[in-house]
Image (tube, rainbow, N blue to C red; front, side):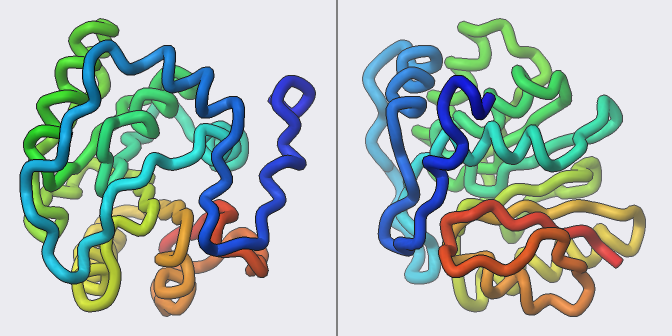
Length: 202
């Protein structure tokens, strides 16, 4: 991918800028078929408003995470579904999204049906009440923070007692995940929070 879109452009030391570029404009035109829905549920104080994960970060995720056909990828806070769609199309694995807002979830289900992607599914659920039992790789672009983030991490820790899992983060939540004693960080710590960070359970 680097020779076509220039991975070095991902160098971003600003924690206010997720790093969107021309690749995002291209990807937007591939997936979205109708008017983008408006958020219909009020967010709780620790929930973070929706931002799309930069496409470049998803390509990097697929290149760097050594996914296998046995993996089940779960995007926690999947928004409009771009991460799940791209991971499935690039890696050929089952992908799922967990999304709090029903309008976003309905939209992503319609997109998956339009694209005939039967191995990409979306679940409308609060992440604290979701079923993580089949996931092996979990992604978070800071969908929430504080006690809510710690509660979801505790659920993932419980899953890690049954099988080894991987967690990939992007954005400010990376600092909290780095501090989890049950996880090993596989990528070096960066000055920017907008670098993908990879973890595996111990």
